Structures are given as C-alpha cells and as structure tokens.
Image (cartoon, rainbow, N blue to C red):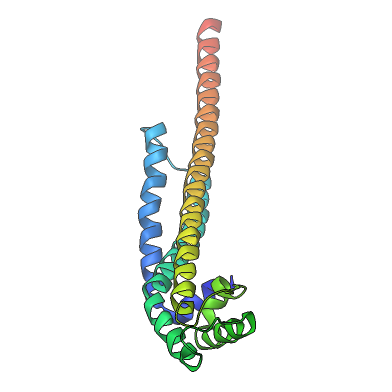
Length: 193
C-alpha cells in the first residue's frame, strides 16, 4: 500500500493512465458477461461487484504504470550510481558494505526504489560493472512485478465476471420460478371455473 502512495507522490500520470487502463479492463469484464448472457440485465449486486472489481483493477493498473515509469527512469538511476562509484578504482571489486551504502544513497534520493532494490546484494562486481548490474536487476524485477500485476488483473476480471454471471443466473432462476408459479395460479383459476 505504501508503494501506491509513493507512486501517487512521484507520478500523477501513473494514476491517470492506471485508471484509464482499468476502465478498458472493465470492457473485458462486461464482454465476458455479455458473452455468457447476451441479454444480461445487470442488478444492483452486479453493479456492486463491478465497482469492487474496478477498484482492484485501478490499484493494480496504477502499480503497473508506476513500474513502467521506474523502468523508464532506470537509465537515470544507473547514471547516478555510476557517479557514486567514481570514488572507487574502476577495476576494484565493490564490497557488500560499499554496495549497500550506494544502494542506501539511491534509496534516500528515490524512496520508491526501496520496495524493489532495498534488499539487493550486489557482491562480486567491479565499480565499473555495479551500475549496470543494479540497473539490470531493477529492470528484471520490474518486468516480473508487472507480469504479476497483469495476472492479478486477469484474476479479478474473471472472478468478478463469474460472480456477476452467477448473480444474473440466480436472478433469472428466481424470475423464472415466479413466472411459473404465476402461470400455475392462472391455469388453476381457469380450471376451477
């Protein structure tokens, strides 16, 4: 949840694009429902489920857009790290303590990175290799992070669609039962006359 607030603070564009993508994802939600029931009539329960799905999708899509923003800024982070490691000899191996100090400095400058490289261990790299190693690790982690968010979005859409379809089915079943009972009463009245 803290990651969402940091993304809000650093990039309102991520919020706007995330909500727009969530709205497009809701089109998939409606498409799944209309694919199952061509003449689906949405009930208040359906709208409530749809609203909850939209909130979950918005959250995930905002995180995806923030992650894309981080990936786009990775070159800047790499340059900053390169300027920090200039104090070391280019071919000298950076110790774990030195790498941790560099990462702590970057995290102090860009707090959002704490969620993604805060526990990274970068041993065995020279000071020349370290910036690209950290940037490569960050890009790799962010791609995996985006993939997981997309999978959560699909789960929310499918689960929400199944719940709405079930509520529509229950609504159709109760309407059909009432119609059958009404028809039986009419037929029963006609036969008594």
